[in-house]
Amino acid sequence: MKKFDAKLETERVINFIRNYYKENNLGGVILGISGGKDSGVVAGLFTKALGKENVIGVTLPCHSKEEDRIDAKLVSDYYGFKLINFDITSTFDAFKDELKNLGDFNLEQTKNSDINLKPRLRMSTLYYLAALYSALKGKTYLVAGTSNKCELFVGYFTKGGDSVHDISTIADFTVDEVIAIGEYLKVPEKVLYKKPNDGLSNQTDEDKLGVKYKDIASYIEDPNLVEKETREKIKRLHNTNKHKFNIPTYRK
Image 1 (cartoon, one colour):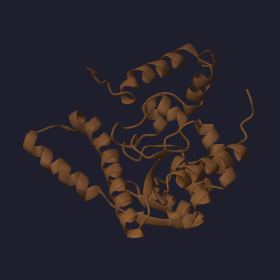
Image 2: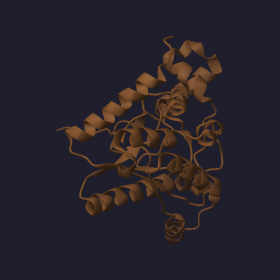
Image 3: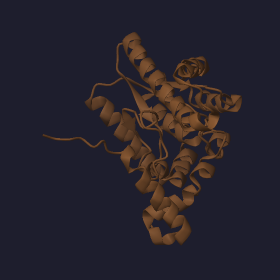
């Protein structure tokens, strides 16, 4: 397997961003900063590509841990871009209050809906802010995606939530490759090596998935590199979530 060249790939992504913005006469970027490695790396890439004055990070707490917001600030302080805190807890709670009009549901029944509502509210907020700052600054702001290749392969994202964005810069990099890029960009270590979690369910990503990102990366390279049980789990996750990538459309 060819050794990953973090410096070369970082420079290529930065050029990719600059070229796309120039070709389409774009101005800035809005991105959610979760306090994790993926958003930290994406923030670093856009700061290098566009300049800190054209990057706006947003923390979007919703019954979240204060530690995540503190870690997000580590990223914005290091790169020097503007960081907005937009608390959507009351919006989420108002939605849940309205749900009571439809019936009396227990926590187990609403668990999956609740988990997926949060990234959908967050994405709506990011697009609102992108439109707002486009009007305020007189230049177009895009919303950046922050999903990596391993997450995408097994469908670990929310339809209508973190799957929605205007530009994607780390979707073709595995978790280890994202970390390598983060090391090159000097993303704060506390953020870069933080155990990944969704900030929504109080579980780590790997706990929820039942497989390790390292095994997903190996499977993508060659399914035979992972043990049979793990291989079957990854295959099942990939196939079960295929509906997230394509919308079946009837054509006359």
